[in-house]
Image (cartoon, rainbow, N blue to C red):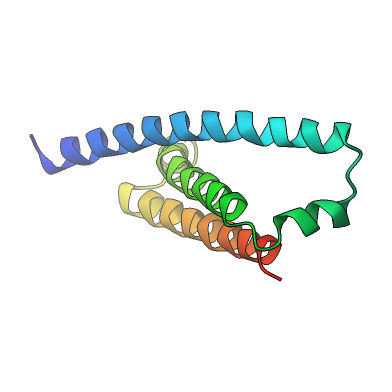
Length: 115
């Protein structure tokens, strides 16, 4: 298998694995939103529950990681097909965007889970 075919196969694999993880995370996240709304929790009450909660932090860190991985593959393809970027430019663009999502998302998780 050529290097390009190997890369395409790996991207396809990680795109689908991240989609499966994202599906589970979104279902749980929406469930948590419904739980919080039904309980009438305020923003400060939600933050009180998330402070120091390693389960919450781990779950949302996985959610952020899955988003960053998923965006990388899709955005790379969009940049090539829609914006007529070359392979190298599209790869760099997708890496930078995914890195930004990863960093900003993990900073947000850290801010919500630490006191």
